[in-house]
Length: 541
Image (cartoon, rainbow, N blue to C red; front, side, top):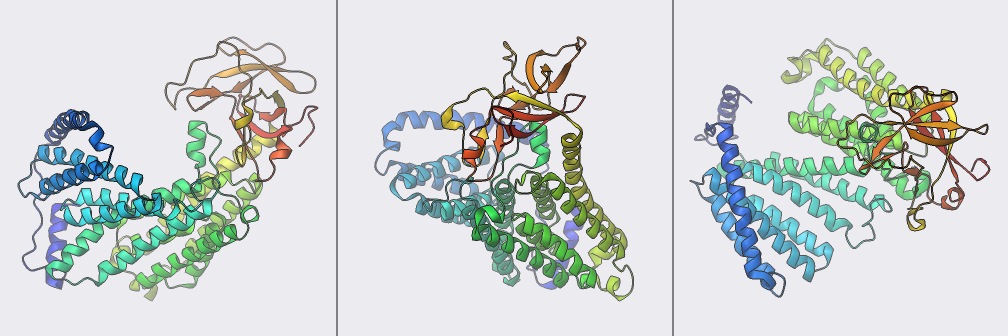
Protein backbone atom coordinates (compact mmCIF):
# COMPACT_ATOMS: atom_id res chain seq x y z
CA UNK A 1 0.00 0.00 0.00
CA UNK A 2 1.36 3.42 -0.93
CA UNK A 3 2.14 5.96 1.77
CA UNK A 4 -0.38 8.48 0.41
CA UNK A 5 -3.19 5.91 0.39
CA UNK A 6 -2.38 4.79 3.93
CA UNK A 7 -2.36 8.38 5.15
CA UNK A 8 -5.74 8.97 3.52
CA UNK A 9 -7.22 5.87 5.17
CA UNK A 10 -5.91 6.93 8.59
CA UNK A 11 -7.36 10.41 8.11
CA UNK A 12 -10.77 8.96 7.20
CA UNK A 13 -10.62 6.61 10.20
CA UNK A 14 -9.89 9.55 12.54
CA UNK A 15 -12.81 11.47 11.07
CA UNK A 16 -15.15 8.48 11.54
CA UNK A 17 -13.99 7.91 15.11
CA UNK A 18 -12.49 4.50 14.36
CA UNK A 19 -9.02 5.74 15.35
CA UNK A 20 -8.17 8.24 18.08
CA UNK A 21 -7.63 11.87 17.07
CA UNK A 22 -3.87 11.66 17.68
CA UNK A 23 -3.36 8.54 15.52
CA UNK A 24 -0.68 8.97 12.87
CA UNK A 25 0.81 6.83 10.14
CA UNK A 26 3.68 4.80 11.61
CA UNK A 27 7.10 5.74 10.33
CA UNK A 28 8.53 3.38 7.79
CA UNK A 29 11.96 1.81 8.14
CA UNK A 30 14.20 3.69 5.74
CA UNK A 31 17.22 1.43 6.09
CA UNK A 32 18.24 -0.38 2.89
CA UNK A 33 17.15 -4.00 2.73
CA UNK A 34 20.75 -5.32 2.29
CA UNK A 35 21.59 -3.73 5.64
CA UNK A 36 18.54 -5.31 7.25
CA UNK A 37 19.41 -8.70 5.81
CA UNK A 38 23.04 -8.56 6.94
CA UNK A 39 22.04 -7.44 10.45
CA UNK A 40 19.56 -10.29 10.78
CA UNK A 41 22.07 -12.83 9.47
CA UNK A 42 24.73 -11.61 11.88
CA UNK A 43 22.35 -11.80 14.81
CA UNK A 44 21.36 -15.38 14.03
CA UNK A 45 25.01 -16.41 13.54
CA UNK A 46 25.80 -14.95 16.95
CA UNK A 47 22.74 -16.37 18.71
CA UNK A 48 22.92 -19.98 17.60
CA UNK A 49 26.42 -20.76 19.05
CA UNK A 50 25.43 -19.04 22.31
CA UNK A 51 22.28 -21.12 22.60
CA UNK A 52 24.18 -24.29 21.75
CA UNK A 53 26.79 -23.52 24.40
CA UNK A 54 24.05 -22.86 26.94
CA UNK A 55 22.52 -26.24 26.17
CA UNK A 56 25.85 -28.01 26.60
CA UNK A 57 26.57 -26.31 29.95
CA UNK A 58 23.17 -26.97 31.47
CA UNK A 59 23.00 -30.52 30.14
CA UNK A 60 20.82 -32.72 32.31
CA UNK A 61 19.18 -29.73 33.99
CA UNK A 62 17.20 -29.14 30.81
CA UNK A 63 15.93 -32.71 30.71
CA UNK A 64 14.86 -33.41 34.26
CA UNK A 65 12.53 -32.01 36.92
CA UNK A 66 11.51 -28.36 36.59
CA UNK A 67 14.52 -27.53 34.40
CA UNK A 68 12.62 -27.13 31.12
CA UNK A 69 10.06 -24.83 32.78
CA UNK A 70 12.65 -22.64 34.50
CA UNK A 71 14.86 -22.24 31.47
CA UNK A 72 11.91 -21.86 29.11
CA UNK A 73 10.24 -19.21 31.28
CA UNK A 74 13.52 -17.30 31.67
CA UNK A 75 14.09 -17.28 27.91
CA UNK A 76 10.52 -16.12 27.25
CA UNK A 77 10.78 -13.30 29.80
CA UNK A 78 14.08 -12.12 28.31
CA UNK A 79 12.67 -12.26 24.79
CA UNK A 80 9.48 -10.43 25.82
CA UNK A 81 11.44 -7.66 27.53
CA UNK A 82 13.59 -7.25 24.42
CA UNK A 83 10.62 -7.11 22.05
CA UNK A 84 8.76 -4.62 24.25
CA UNK A 85 11.73 -2.28 24.38
CA UNK A 86 11.00 0.89 22.40
CA UNK A 87 14.57 1.43 21.19
CA UNK A 88 15.20 -2.15 20.05
CA UNK A 89 17.61 -2.43 17.13
CA UNK A 90 17.22 -4.98 14.37
CA UNK A 91 20.26 -6.90 15.63
CA UNK A 92 18.80 -7.15 19.14
CA UNK A 93 15.39 -8.10 17.73
CA UNK A 94 16.91 -10.98 15.81
CA UNK A 95 18.80 -12.06 18.92
CA UNK A 96 15.51 -12.12 20.84
CA UNK A 97 13.76 -14.30 18.27
CA UNK A 98 15.95 -17.41 18.83
CA UNK A 99 15.50 -16.92 22.57
CA UNK A 100 11.74 -16.87 22.07
CA UNK A 101 11.84 -20.05 19.99
CA UNK A 102 14.08 -21.84 22.49
CA UNK A 103 11.83 -20.80 25.37
CA UNK A 104 8.74 -22.13 23.61
CA UNK A 105 10.58 -25.30 22.70
CA UNK A 106 11.66 -25.95 26.29
CA UNK A 107 8.14 -25.39 27.60
CA UNK A 108 6.76 -27.66 24.88
CA UNK A 109 9.22 -30.36 25.93
CA UNK A 110 8.28 -30.07 29.59
CA UNK A 111 4.53 -29.96 28.97
CA UNK A 112 4.69 -32.88 26.54
CA UNK A 113 6.60 -34.88 29.12
CA UNK A 114 4.35 -34.15 32.11
CA UNK A 115 0.88 -33.69 30.59
CA UNK A 116 -1.32 -35.61 28.16
CA UNK A 117 -0.55 -34.63 24.58
CA UNK A 118 -3.95 -33.04 24.10
CA UNK A 119 -3.71 -30.84 27.19
CA UNK A 120 -0.10 -29.89 26.43
CA UNK A 121 -1.09 -28.67 22.95
CA UNK A 122 -3.99 -26.66 24.39
CA UNK A 123 -1.75 -24.98 26.98
CA UNK A 124 0.78 -24.08 24.30
CA UNK A 125 -2.00 -22.62 22.13
CA UNK A 126 -3.09 -20.37 25.00
CA UNK A 127 0.54 -19.42 25.60
CA UNK A 128 0.99 -18.45 21.94
CA UNK A 129 -2.08 -16.20 22.13
CA UNK A 130 -0.80 -14.61 25.35
CA UNK A 131 2.57 -13.90 23.75
CA UNK A 132 0.84 -12.34 20.76
CA UNK A 133 -0.96 -9.98 23.15
CA UNK A 134 2.26 -9.10 24.99
CA UNK A 135 4.68 -8.65 22.09
CA UNK A 136 4.07 -5.49 20.00
CA UNK A 137 5.40 -6.82 16.71
CA UNK A 138 2.88 -7.35 13.92
CA UNK A 139 4.94 -9.92 12.02
CA UNK A 140 5.51 -11.88 15.21
CA UNK A 141 1.80 -11.81 16.02
CA UNK A 142 1.04 -13.29 12.61
CA UNK A 143 3.46 -16.16 13.28
CA UNK A 144 2.09 -16.74 16.77
CA UNK A 145 -1.45 -16.74 15.39
CA UNK A 146 -0.52 -19.47 12.93
CA UNK A 147 1.19 -21.45 15.70
CA UNK A 148 -1.86 -21.11 17.97
CA UNK A 149 -4.11 -22.42 15.20
CA UNK A 150 -1.93 -25.46 14.57
CA UNK A 151 -1.73 -26.19 18.29
CA UNK A 152 -5.51 -25.93 18.64
CA UNK A 153 -5.97 -28.47 15.85
CA UNK A 154 -3.41 -30.73 17.52
CA UNK A 155 -5.32 -30.43 20.80
CA UNK A 156 -8.51 -31.49 19.02
CA UNK A 157 -7.08 -34.60 17.35
CA UNK A 158 -4.37 -35.91 19.67
CA UNK A 159 -5.46 -38.71 21.96
CA UNK A 160 -8.83 -39.16 20.25
CA UNK A 161 -7.96 -41.91 17.79
CA UNK A 162 -7.55 -39.39 14.99
CA UNK A 163 -3.76 -39.24 15.01
CA UNK A 164 -3.47 -40.92 11.59
CA UNK A 165 -4.61 -38.44 8.96
CA UNK A 166 -4.98 -41.14 6.31
CA UNK A 167 -7.03 -43.48 8.51
CA UNK A 168 -9.20 -40.93 10.32
CA UNK A 169 -9.74 -37.93 8.04
CA UNK A 170 -13.03 -36.94 9.69
CA UNK A 171 -11.34 -35.86 12.93
CA UNK A 172 -8.93 -33.58 11.08
CA UNK A 173 -11.74 -32.19 8.89
CA UNK A 174 -13.77 -31.35 11.99
CA UNK A 175 -10.76 -29.72 13.66
CA UNK A 176 -10.07 -27.48 10.67
CA UNK A 177 -13.73 -26.45 10.50
CA UNK A 178 -13.51 -25.50 14.18
CA UNK A 179 -10.38 -23.47 13.47
CA UNK A 180 -12.17 -21.60 10.68
CA UNK A 181 -15.18 -20.88 12.90
CA UNK A 182 -12.84 -19.50 15.57
CA UNK A 183 -11.44 -17.11 12.97
CA UNK A 184 -14.96 -16.10 11.92
CA UNK A 185 -15.83 -15.40 15.55
CA UNK A 186 -12.69 -13.28 15.94
CA UNK A 187 -13.69 -11.22 12.90
CA UNK A 188 -17.12 -10.53 14.38
CA UNK A 189 -15.53 -9.54 17.68
CA UNK A 190 -13.12 -7.24 15.88
CA UNK A 191 -16.00 -5.34 14.24
CA UNK A 192 -17.73 -4.85 17.60
CA UNK A 193 -14.74 -3.30 19.33
CA UNK A 194 -15.05 0.38 20.09
CA UNK A 195 -13.23 3.14 18.26
CA UNK A 196 -11.32 4.38 21.30
CA UNK A 197 -7.62 3.74 21.78
CA UNK A 198 -8.05 0.47 23.66
CA UNK A 199 -10.57 -0.90 21.16
CA UNK A 200 -8.37 0.07 18.23
CA UNK A 201 -5.34 -1.65 19.77
CA UNK A 202 -7.32 -4.82 20.41
CA UNK A 203 -8.68 -4.72 16.85
CA UNK A 204 -5.15 -4.40 15.48
CA UNK A 205 -4.06 -7.35 17.61
CA UNK A 206 -6.94 -9.49 16.32
CA UNK A 207 -6.13 -8.47 12.75
CA UNK A 208 -2.53 -9.72 12.96
CA UNK A 209 -3.29 -12.89 14.92
CA UNK A 210 -6.27 -13.59 12.68
CA UNK A 211 -4.16 -13.27 9.54
CA UNK A 212 -1.73 -15.93 10.76
CA UNK A 213 -4.59 -18.11 12.05
CA UNK A 214 -6.34 -17.96 8.68
CA UNK A 215 -3.21 -18.76 6.69
CA UNK A 216 -2.58 -21.82 8.88
CA UNK A 217 -6.21 -22.90 8.41
CA UNK A 218 -6.02 -22.53 4.64
CA UNK A 219 -2.80 -24.51 4.50
CA UNK A 220 -4.27 -27.20 6.76
CA UNK A 221 -7.38 -27.63 4.62
CA UNK A 222 -5.26 -27.83 1.47
CA UNK A 223 -2.99 -30.43 3.08
CA UNK A 224 -5.99 -32.40 4.34
CA UNK A 225 -7.48 -32.57 0.84
CA UNK A 226 -4.39 -34.40 -0.50
CA UNK A 227 -1.91 -33.72 -3.26
CA UNK A 228 -3.08 -31.50 -6.09
CA UNK A 229 -2.59 -32.92 -9.58
CA UNK A 230 -0.34 -29.98 -10.50
CA UNK A 231 2.20 -30.87 -7.81
CA UNK A 232 1.70 -34.61 -8.22
CA UNK A 233 2.46 -34.38 -11.92
CA UNK A 234 5.47 -32.08 -11.45
CA UNK A 235 7.07 -34.11 -8.69
CA UNK A 236 6.15 -37.47 -10.12
CA UNK A 237 3.97 -38.57 -7.23
CA UNK A 238 0.89 -40.69 -7.60
CA UNK A 239 -0.98 -38.28 -5.41
CA UNK A 240 -1.85 -38.52 -1.74
CA UNK A 241 -5.50 -39.34 -1.21
CA UNK A 242 -6.55 -38.62 2.37
CA UNK A 243 -10.26 -39.24 2.23
CA UNK A 244 -12.71 -41.41 0.35
CA UNK A 245 -16.18 -40.69 -0.93
CA UNK A 246 -19.25 -41.00 1.29
CA UNK A 247 -19.69 -44.62 0.22
CA UNK A 248 -16.36 -45.53 1.81
CA UNK A 249 -16.78 -43.52 5.03
CA UNK A 250 -20.43 -44.02 5.92
CA UNK A 251 -22.13 -41.19 7.73
CA UNK A 252 -18.76 -39.49 8.34
CA UNK A 253 -18.36 -38.87 4.62
CA UNK A 254 -21.96 -37.71 4.23
CA UNK A 255 -21.55 -35.28 7.15
CA UNK A 256 -18.36 -33.83 5.67
CA UNK A 257 -19.99 -33.36 2.29
CA UNK A 258 -23.16 -31.80 3.74
CA UNK A 259 -21.13 -29.48 5.98
CA UNK A 260 -18.94 -28.39 3.10
CA UNK A 261 -21.96 -27.63 0.89
CA UNK A 262 -23.60 -25.66 3.72
CA UNK A 263 -20.46 -23.54 4.14
CA UNK A 264 -20.43 -22.84 0.40
CA UNK A 265 -24.03 -21.59 0.57
CA UNK A 266 -23.08 -19.48 3.61
CA UNK A 267 -20.28 -17.95 1.51
CA UNK A 268 -22.79 -16.87 -1.15
CA UNK A 269 -25.07 -15.41 1.53
CA UNK A 270 -22.10 -13.50 2.99
CA UNK A 271 -21.33 -11.84 -0.34
CA UNK A 272 -25.00 -11.04 -0.97
CA UNK A 273 -25.22 -9.36 2.43
CA UNK A 274 -22.02 -7.38 1.96
CA UNK A 275 -22.62 -6.36 -1.67
CA UNK A 276 -26.29 -5.54 -2.39
CA UNK A 277 -25.56 -5.50 -6.11
CA UNK A 278 -25.14 -9.30 -6.00
CA UNK A 279 -28.66 -9.93 -4.71
CA UNK A 280 -29.79 -11.28 -8.06
CA UNK A 281 -31.23 -14.62 -9.24
CA UNK A 282 -27.98 -15.51 -11.01
CA UNK A 283 -26.15 -15.58 -7.64
CA UNK A 284 -28.43 -18.45 -6.56
CA UNK A 285 -27.25 -20.45 -9.56
CA UNK A 286 -23.60 -19.70 -8.78
CA UNK A 287 -24.16 -20.69 -5.15
CA UNK A 288 -25.68 -24.01 -6.20
CA UNK A 289 -22.79 -24.79 -8.55
CA UNK A 290 -20.17 -23.95 -5.93
CA UNK A 291 -22.17 -25.86 -3.33
CA UNK A 292 -22.17 -28.89 -5.63
CA UNK A 293 -18.39 -28.68 -6.01
CA UNK A 294 -18.06 -28.33 -2.24
CA UNK A 295 -20.19 -31.48 -1.84
CA UNK A 296 -17.74 -33.37 -4.02
CA UNK A 297 -14.69 -31.88 -2.27
CA UNK A 298 -15.31 -31.53 1.50
CA UNK A 299 -12.42 -29.11 2.06
CA UNK A 300 -13.80 -26.66 -0.48
CA UNK A 301 -16.78 -25.26 1.42
CA UNK A 302 -14.64 -23.78 4.21
CA UNK A 303 -12.34 -22.23 1.61
CA UNK A 304 -15.28 -20.65 -0.23
CA UNK A 305 -16.45 -19.13 3.06
CA UNK A 306 -12.97 -17.81 3.91
CA UNK A 307 -12.67 -16.33 0.41
CA UNK A 308 -16.09 -14.65 0.66
CA UNK A 309 -15.41 -13.15 4.09
CA UNK A 310 -12.00 -11.84 3.05
CA UNK A 311 -13.38 -10.33 -0.16
CA UNK A 312 -16.36 -8.76 1.65
CA UNK A 313 -13.97 -7.07 4.12
CA UNK A 314 -11.43 -6.03 1.44
CA UNK A 315 -8.69 -8.34 2.77
CA UNK A 316 -7.43 -8.99 -0.72
CA UNK A 317 -4.15 -10.72 0.14
CA UNK A 318 -5.95 -13.18 2.39
CA UNK A 319 -8.61 -13.61 -0.30
CA UNK A 320 -5.88 -14.45 -2.82
CA UNK A 321 -4.47 -17.06 -0.41
CA UNK A 322 -7.94 -18.59 0.00
CA UNK A 323 -8.39 -18.67 -3.78
CA UNK A 324 -5.04 -20.46 -4.21
CA UNK A 325 -6.03 -23.02 -1.58
CA UNK A 326 -9.35 -23.56 -3.38
CA UNK A 327 -7.54 -24.08 -6.69
CA UNK A 328 -5.31 -26.65 -4.95
CA UNK A 329 -8.36 -28.55 -3.67
CA UNK A 330 -10.03 -28.54 -7.10
CA UNK A 331 -6.81 -29.91 -8.57
CA UNK A 332 -6.80 -32.64 -5.92
CA UNK A 333 -10.21 -33.81 -7.20
CA UNK A 334 -8.22 -35.68 -9.84
CA UNK A 335 -7.18 -38.21 -7.17
CA UNK A 336 -10.67 -39.02 -5.87
CA UNK A 337 -10.64 -42.75 -6.47
CA UNK A 338 -14.36 -43.41 -6.22
CA UNK A 339 -15.12 -41.72 -9.55
CA UNK A 340 -13.82 -42.63 -13.04
CA UNK A 341 -11.76 -40.03 -14.85
CA UNK A 342 -14.48 -39.50 -17.46
CA UNK A 343 -17.07 -38.81 -14.75
CA UNK A 344 -14.79 -36.30 -13.02
CA UNK A 345 -14.12 -34.59 -16.34
CA UNK A 346 -17.83 -34.27 -17.09
CA UNK A 347 -18.57 -32.91 -13.61
CA UNK A 348 -15.88 -30.24 -13.82
CA UNK A 349 -16.77 -29.35 -17.39
CA UNK A 350 -20.44 -29.02 -16.46
CA UNK A 351 -19.57 -26.77 -13.51
CA UNK A 352 -17.33 -24.61 -15.71
CA UNK A 353 -19.99 -24.21 -18.39
CA UNK A 354 -22.67 -23.41 -15.81
CA UNK A 355 -20.53 -20.77 -14.11
CA UNK A 356 -19.56 -19.18 -17.41
CA UNK A 357 -23.20 -19.02 -18.53
CA UNK A 358 -24.39 -17.54 -15.22
CA UNK A 359 -21.67 -14.89 -15.18
CA UNK A 360 -22.31 -13.98 -18.82
CA UNK A 361 -26.07 -13.66 -18.33
CA UNK A 362 -25.78 -11.64 -15.13
CA UNK A 363 -27.21 -8.09 -15.38
CA UNK A 364 -24.61 -5.38 -15.77
CA UNK A 365 -26.52 -2.12 -15.47
CA UNK A 366 -29.40 -0.47 -13.67
CA UNK A 367 -30.10 -0.31 -10.00
CA UNK A 368 -28.17 -3.52 -9.27
CA UNK A 369 -24.94 -2.09 -10.61
CA UNK A 370 -25.58 1.23 -8.90
CA UNK A 371 -26.03 -0.53 -5.58
CA UNK A 372 -22.69 -2.31 -5.78
CA UNK A 373 -19.98 -0.96 -3.47
CA UNK A 374 -17.65 1.69 -4.81
CA UNK A 375 -14.64 -0.63 -4.73
CA UNK A 376 -16.37 -3.02 -7.13
CA UNK A 377 -18.03 -0.34 -9.23
CA UNK A 378 -14.67 1.30 -9.91
CA UNK A 379 -13.49 -1.81 -11.69
CA UNK A 380 -16.59 -1.92 -13.84
CA UNK A 381 -19.39 -4.31 -12.94
CA UNK A 382 -19.22 -6.28 -16.17
CA UNK A 383 -15.44 -6.53 -16.26
CA UNK A 384 -15.24 -7.69 -12.64
CA UNK A 385 -17.84 -10.42 -13.19
CA UNK A 386 -16.10 -11.53 -16.35
CA UNK A 387 -12.76 -11.65 -14.53
CA UNK A 388 -14.23 -13.75 -11.72
CA UNK A 389 -15.87 -16.07 -14.22
CA UNK A 390 -12.67 -16.35 -16.25
CA UNK A 391 -10.64 -17.30 -13.15
CA UNK A 392 -13.15 -19.94 -12.10
CA UNK A 393 -13.34 -21.26 -15.66
CA UNK A 394 -9.54 -21.37 -15.95
CA UNK A 395 -9.20 -23.42 -12.75
CA UNK A 396 -11.86 -25.90 -13.80
CA UNK A 397 -10.60 -26.18 -17.37
CA UNK A 398 -7.05 -26.71 -16.16
CA UNK A 399 -8.12 -29.60 -13.95
CA UNK A 400 -10.42 -30.92 -16.66
CA UNK A 401 -7.68 -30.70 -19.30
CA UNK A 402 -5.34 -32.88 -17.27
CA UNK A 403 -8.11 -35.45 -16.78
CA UNK A 404 -8.88 -35.39 -20.51
CA UNK A 405 -5.21 -36.03 -21.36
CA UNK A 406 -5.12 -39.05 -19.05
CA UNK A 407 -8.38 -40.33 -20.52
CA UNK A 408 -6.96 -40.06 -24.05
CA UNK A 409 -3.84 -41.96 -22.98
CA UNK A 410 -6.00 -44.70 -21.48
CA UNK A 411 -8.12 -44.97 -24.62
CA UNK A 412 -5.36 -44.76 -27.25
CA UNK A 413 -2.19 -45.86 -25.45
CA UNK A 414 -0.49 -49.18 -26.09
CA UNK A 415 -1.40 -51.89 -23.53
CA UNK A 416 1.76 -53.06 -21.76
CA UNK A 417 2.19 -55.35 -18.76
CA UNK A 418 5.25 -55.12 -16.49
CA UNK A 419 5.96 -57.72 -13.83
CA UNK A 420 6.09 -56.63 -10.21
CA UNK A 421 9.30 -57.02 -8.22
CA UNK A 422 8.59 -58.41 -4.73
CA UNK A 423 8.68 -55.75 -2.01
CA UNK A 424 8.73 -55.90 1.77
CA UNK A 425 5.48 -57.74 2.70
CA UNK A 426 5.10 -55.49 5.75
CA UNK A 427 4.75 -52.43 3.51
CA UNK A 428 2.84 -54.05 0.64
CA UNK A 429 -0.60 -53.11 1.91
CA UNK A 430 -0.92 -49.82 3.80
CA UNK A 431 -4.57 -48.97 4.36
CA UNK A 432 -5.88 -48.01 0.95
CA UNK A 433 -2.77 -48.32 -1.22
CA UNK A 434 -0.23 -50.94 -2.23
CA UNK A 435 3.50 -50.39 -2.55
CA UNK A 436 4.84 -51.19 -6.02
CA UNK A 437 8.26 -51.76 -7.52
CA UNK A 438 8.98 -52.45 -11.17
CA UNK A 439 12.31 -53.75 -12.52
CA UNK A 440 14.76 -51.18 -13.86
CA UNK A 441 18.07 -51.77 -15.69
CA UNK A 442 21.01 -52.84 -13.55
CA UNK A 443 23.47 -50.13 -12.66
CA UNK A 444 20.83 -47.40 -12.80
CA UNK A 445 21.64 -45.91 -9.41
CA UNK A 446 21.79 -42.18 -10.03
CA UNK A 447 19.29 -39.93 -8.35
CA UNK A 448 17.41 -36.88 -9.59
CA UNK A 449 19.26 -33.72 -8.62
CA UNK A 450 16.25 -31.44 -8.95
CA UNK A 451 12.51 -31.94 -9.32
CA UNK A 452 12.56 -30.20 -12.72
CA UNK A 453 15.39 -32.34 -14.09
CA UNK A 454 14.64 -33.87 -17.48
CA UNK A 455 13.17 -37.32 -17.03
CA UNK A 456 15.06 -40.28 -18.53
CA UNK A 457 13.53 -43.04 -20.63
CA UNK A 458 14.01 -46.77 -20.58
CA UNK A 459 13.83 -49.04 -23.63
CA UNK A 460 11.38 -51.94 -23.36
CA UNK A 461 10.35 -54.86 -25.56
CA UNK A 462 7.10 -56.80 -25.20
CA UNK A 463 6.26 -60.37 -26.12
CA UNK A 464 3.13 -61.65 -27.86
CA UNK A 465 1.07 -61.33 -24.65
CA UNK A 466 2.15 -57.70 -24.15
CA UNK A 467 4.44 -58.44 -21.19
CA UNK A 468 7.32 -55.97 -21.36
CA UNK A 469 10.94 -56.51 -20.42
CA UNK A 470 12.91 -53.40 -19.47
CA UNK A 471 16.22 -53.66 -21.33
CA UNK A 472 18.28 -50.49 -20.85
CA UNK A 473 18.31 -46.76 -20.29
CA UNK A 474 17.73 -44.91 -23.54
CA UNK A 475 20.44 -42.63 -24.82
CA UNK A 476 20.61 -41.27 -28.35
CA UNK A 477 20.55 -44.60 -30.19
CA UNK A 478 17.75 -45.54 -32.54
CA UNK A 479 15.23 -48.12 -31.37
CA UNK A 480 15.26 -51.60 -32.83
CA UNK A 481 12.17 -53.27 -34.24
CA UNK A 482 9.61 -53.99 -31.54
CA UNK A 483 11.24 -51.69 -28.98
CA UNK A 484 9.46 -48.74 -27.37
CA UNK A 485 10.16 -46.10 -24.74
CA UNK A 486 8.75 -45.65 -21.25
CA UNK A 487 9.35 -42.47 -19.26
CA UNK A 488 10.63 -42.62 -15.68
CA UNK A 489 9.35 -40.46 -12.84
CA UNK A 490 11.20 -38.94 -9.84
CA UNK A 491 9.82 -40.21 -6.54
CA UNK A 492 11.33 -40.04 -3.04
CA UNK A 493 14.83 -39.28 -4.30
CA UNK A 494 15.00 -41.97 -7.00
CA UNK A 495 13.58 -42.86 -10.40
CA UNK A 496 10.56 -45.16 -10.68
CA UNK A 497 8.51 -46.50 -13.56
CA UNK A 498 5.52 -44.10 -13.49
CA UNK A 499 4.67 -44.66 -9.79
CA UNK A 500 5.46 -46.73 -6.72
CA UNK A 501 1.91 -47.07 -5.35
CA UNK A 502 -1.50 -48.34 -6.40
CA UNK A 503 -4.52 -46.84 -4.63
CA UNK A 504 -7.78 -48.69 -4.02
CA UNK A 505 -10.89 -48.62 -1.84
CA UNK A 506 -10.62 -49.62 1.78
CA UNK A 507 -11.43 -53.27 2.34
CA UNK A 508 -10.11 -54.46 -1.06
CA UNK A 509 -6.60 -55.42 0.04
CA UNK A 510 -7.27 -59.14 -0.48
CA UNK A 511 -8.37 -58.53 -4.06
CA UNK A 512 -5.21 -56.63 -5.02
CA UNK A 513 -2.83 -58.90 -3.09
CA UNK A 514 -3.01 -61.29 -6.07
CA UNK A 515 -1.42 -58.74 -8.40
CA UNK A 516 1.64 -59.93 -10.33
CA UNK A 517 1.73 -57.44 -13.20
CA UNK A 518 1.11 -53.74 -13.57
CA UNK A 519 -1.09 -52.75 -16.51
CA UNK A 520 0.11 -49.64 -18.35
CA UNK A 521 -0.96 -47.56 -21.29
CA UNK A 522 2.03 -46.17 -23.19
CA UNK A 523 1.96 -43.32 -25.72
CA UNK A 524 4.33 -43.25 -28.73
CA UNK A 525 6.42 -40.54 -27.04
CA UNK A 526 7.02 -42.70 -23.96
CA UNK A 527 4.46 -41.18 -21.60
CA UNK A 528 2.91 -43.98 -19.55
CA UNK A 529 0.05 -44.37 -17.11
CA UNK A 530 -0.64 -47.19 -14.67
CA UNK A 531 -4.29 -48.16 -15.20
CA UNK A 532 -4.68 -51.47 -13.36
CA UNK A 533 -3.26 -54.62 -11.85
CA UNK A 534 -3.26 -58.10 -13.40
CA UNK A 535 -2.88 -61.56 -11.91
CA UNK A 536 -0.34 -64.28 -12.64
CA UNK A 537 -2.06 -65.18 -15.95
CA UNK A 538 -2.79 -61.55 -16.85
CA UNK A 539 -6.36 -61.95 -15.64
CA UNK A 540 -8.20 -58.85 -14.44
CA UNK A 541 -8.55 -58.53 -10.68
